Image (cartoon, rainbow, N blue to C red; front, side, top):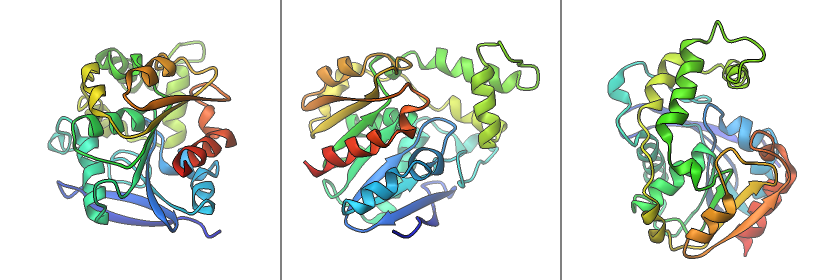
Length: 254
């Protein structure tokens, strides 16, 4: 199996975004987590390869400010809902029609996918929601405040501080902190009543020790046509386990 090929395209506002593609077959658009990347969530641990070997094309976007995509410092590059608009731009760029592709998101990627589908911006054939529960769809201001503190106090956060793990992760990923702070203000809370609009088959896939975003089982129960799948791990390491990729293939092949 050949390595993913990376290309770039201009999003709705001209911002250059990177997309990694592996395999051929029915397209699967994969969205990574906050301050991570396609490489960290999907490529490094073999999930893209596993999908490709199962006969899919894994299309793995780097969100703006993440991975190999641009991280502009102009506040105008960060309107509300910018990540949803970026994913819609990718789908348009690829010429994918309604119901012609599947959509997978982990953590922030799952949150973005839910917003996009519930607001009828995207219409995938199937939707896989990974590392997300009901609580993760709300209280965004509190969550954003945590990461803003990490950014603002980056050089003074020491081991033992509750923010140290997040600081270490941002440093390891080389996140542009100026752009990241701008991005944090583009996201809104989600109205749970809109879950009723997500009518395609869905799977909520979470680690058995993952409590970061609340209950995945509760989220699955609120969706019209969803089931809950448990895989090993907590929020930070469930994405490193082969069981996540296996669960994705099983759901998308069904």
